[in-house]
Image (cartoon, rainbow, N blue to C red):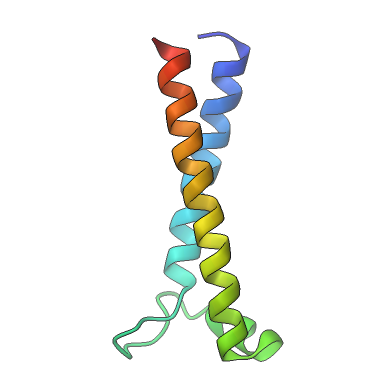
Length: 78
């Protein structure tokens, strides 16, 4: 693996950590509240509906980036 492989690996790890964090921040659909309680600051800044839409967009973007990096790394390693 060369330099570009290590850069992809570092980005992949960062995206994984951000994806875990953003999923834990989202509010639960079952009514049990937010995973880490961090959603209250977003709710007060954007409103409840806007905060949920923003979190869904960020989660979607991170998931797409995760899959793209996983595919790129599979080609770089082989």
